[in-house]
Image (cartoon, rainbow, N blue to C red; front, top):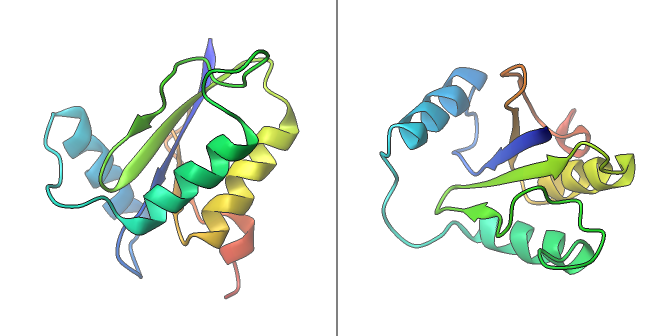
Length: 116
């Protein structure tokens, strides 16, 4: 079993409903066209610098990570250290991304963005 998170690069002011709608569109195979959002590109680079996709003791249950124009999906192992989740949240906050928890459907801004 894995723990699955998706970070989304949506417009400022996007709501939880917007994130869920974007995710449902993706699941139906409907993807936004165009160049990758720089927030996703820089998030992915920073995340994989800390946790490479093809390393021993990787936190990733599925590699390569699913990277799209406006989102990045991470399937983490059930034994993933809390530090990995904290890194995901910290980097998402630094890059202005929203987090979607696929286990319960909750959408939240990472702690670093709360109260900005």
